[in-house]
Image (cartoon, rainbow over all chains, first blue to last red; front, side, top):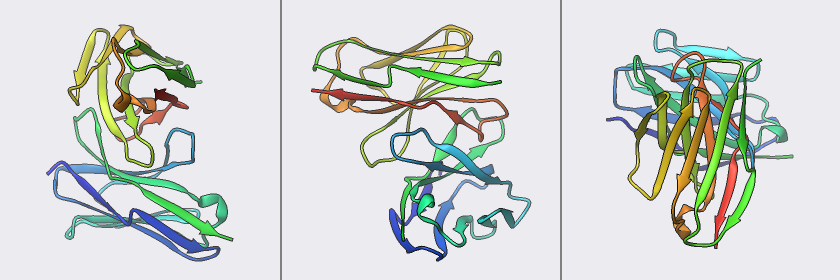
Length: 112
Length: 112
């Protein structure tokens, strides 16, 4: 119940296309859903996050869509660029808990 | 400003040798600190976390240990490394809650 399942494992998108990464969870007590971006040889960095009281959050080309009834959330990258090529992790946290539950990661490649 | 430092950045160690990785945080007090491991092409595995000096929670039983001798210092150790200990080790802290982790640059360990 503490798992976050992420798909796909890898994704190739053409430059200018839309990249979509999906995550699903079981524990309805999760109350914060961040996405992290990791470039090769670097630590992950917080990209964007959402709370379950909203259905969508947009920051520039990055949008989180959240479906509370389906217990799913997804990251959309509009107008994908080669510089977006990285590994993306979704995650979830519980109020009062001291740790995040991470998805398995998606390696995104944007072809020029 | 708040920063996190990790060292060494890279190390190659023989099987059976000891290990010490160090992480320090600047610009804050009483942070929650975390050690993650990332095997090649894999996800983020939480190893240890600490909510205060001397307080260590272990997530995965193994031949690694962690200590927090000072408020802003977190150390990952092993008495005898195994081949399976190879990986990318990441220290992290959360200034605003469990969902918003800030990661260090990582320490890449190769055990031969």
